[in-house]
Length: 210
Figure: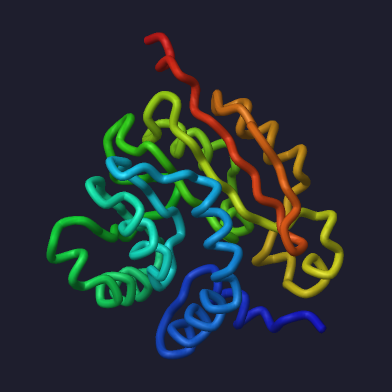
């Protein structure tokens, strides 16, 4: 059965009490996959880590525990999710170890070469332009940084038929890897995990020539 469009819209950009509820349900449903993606990032104690589309911020505390001497920042386009993520991680925010920004992937409010690791879990369906998104992620990643993407592809026919195509765009794996390549990132591994694809990509070790 296809999920109603108004439910899918809340997953894309949470608003009001319904958005709050749906975001927490989805975060709980996908937590095991989040943990696998976080494990794959191999976060080091001094790392600076960005979670793009952080939602209610459950992953931020886990990332902060691993980057014990570093810093973790979440970004989400929903003001409601930013508020919830800050509240959920209040003590870490007060300590300056976690911050949350209201921002979409196409315009990340961070300087170049700011992050060692970047996490994106079940969010690229909502990105209208993969090239713009990956170019911006590449810009804020340090040379040699690592990106973990977890998403369902168009090969997952059950997922494709369960969500309205006006809201969710399930890309082909080749479409994602091609966009990463155009952003000067190289796919280092892909792994199917419970129907979802876990893709790791690396930023180039040397910055682009000016």
